[in-house]
Amino acid sequence: MAQENKPDAVYQEQTKEYTLNKDGSWTYHYSHKLLINTYFAFHRLYGEDFIVYDPEYQKLKINHSVTTMADGKQVPTPGNAYNELLPRFAANVPAWNRLREMVVTHTALERGAVIDFDYLLTNVKSNIPVLMWNEQLMMNSPVKKLTFIIHVPSGASFNYEHFNIQTKPAVVKSGGKTTYTWIFENLPADLREDFRPKEQQNRPRIVFLASAKKADAIAVFASQEAFKCEATPEIKVAAETAVKGIDKPLLKALKLQEKIANELNTWQVPLQYTGYKLRNAAAIWQSNGGTEAEKAVLLTTMLRLQNIQAEPVAVVPETFYTRKVSSPALMEHFLVKLSIQGMEPVFISPTQTDPQDLRYTLSGKRIISLVPGKKQLSEVICEPKNILTLTGNLKLDEESELKGNLNLELGDRLNPWLKIQKDSSYVTTMLSNAFGNGKISKIVKGKTDIDLSSFSFHTSSGSFTNEIAGHIFLKLPAVPSGSDSWHMTELITNRIEPFEIPFPVNESYDIFISMPDDVSLVSPEADLKTENEFGSLEVSISAEGQQLHIVRKISIIKTYVPVEKYDLVRAMINTWNSKKCREVVLKKAN
Image 1: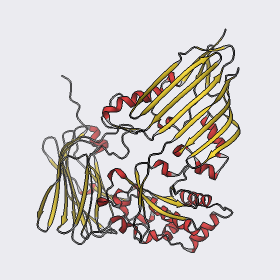
Image 2 (image 1 turned 60 degrees about the horizontal axis):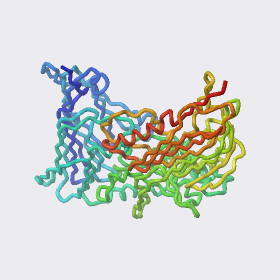
Image 3 (image 1 turned 180 degrees about the horizontal axis):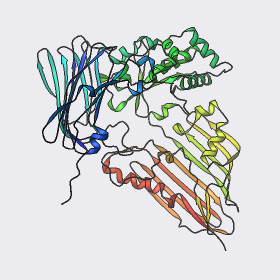
């Protein structure tokens, strides 16, 4: 009889309980009973529990921690198994070195043991007097029973949205409060398949917002002093020094971005552990570092000093956004929005330099302005086209080098327009990378707009050929920034979760290659076409006389692929990446 594969561990019971109090404080009660099935589970996965909190405004109480061994013996966790550490992300971060991480080391673990763990976290004050959360419910191991509870005082404002959940909560009003309870059974484990949806929009999730007094959580967040973006004399001098000798507003903006991104430390402290509080520009500058949100504030401050209209913005997944549950708990990233005369608004990062306007990487995201005293305007970013087109005429010479003239078009996210504005010499490097690190000359710039740039150039490279026993294996040119950047070289046959392609693309190659008189094509010609709701594919390899004609096109228009449609997309991408569509074999005459 075949042995049943057990998971490493199973949550027999799990409870997550949130309580909002009338004064705006809140508590979070967590408990679980976790069955250990394997050595790996207690050596690597669940030997310890970690709780991050801020002693300045939060109190942690461990209600109990007991291991029930396989024979039924109960072993309480000893006192020396509770240790407070500095969270890893707060190391070398003076502004947040008061944070603590309680590490609870469970003892008496063995296969068949059950960890019974229970704690209460009380938030006694908050920068934003609301209880807000964005909870993805699946864990690394299966959960037999999850009880999810929210208590709010009578008369309080409460809204929720749930996703991939079929049942509504049980609602009970008693003792001056209203209780919402969801009970879930047999939740599967949170898998780690490659190319799973980035936003995990296929998994059960609850997003909620509760406040003792009705409040716009994002407006309250944006009203804090930091978002006034007030400069000190030191910040003013630093900004003026950085852009000295630069006239164009866009280049000034990119220079200041470079300064903030590269010269100030980026602190990876999650917003929830800062209490959703940001320091002002002066404190950020003096400490030589900040979180992503804080660096957005400082960059905005410097840009305004140069009379560049700028504002910090938050990036929120539109999938989970509704006005009634909109809160900082949904914010994924913080950027800076530039509004320069004669240009559409441009989005840049405060933590890294960008080759292109980040608008083209934010499809399906909602951008929310963070300006105090104003309505928080927002917009949803549309899907870009992401064009990549390479055409031209090449010649394979007697030394097996490819030489000739090519034309390259790059659109939307594939167009490194901002990088080219900063450094025009980058064009040569980019074209060399696009053509096997070949030699580039005679560059002629065509259109160079933010949405599309085009170039004509002469190139030569020997990296496309490999000669073995009188045969030449010729790799067909492919620009690495397009679909090759997905690295989908191997796709598993069956999936449990939906499949997500990193970004849509319209990529095409149409190239003629002249061969020497003593060389002929010996690999089969190709003529493949396929089309479905997710995109299309065309590959044509043909020879007429001493000339090869290579046509390769792939278009992806929908990136989210349900499990039942995965085979369609897998077949198309595997064909696109197959050797018969990427390489031709030539033979030299004896």
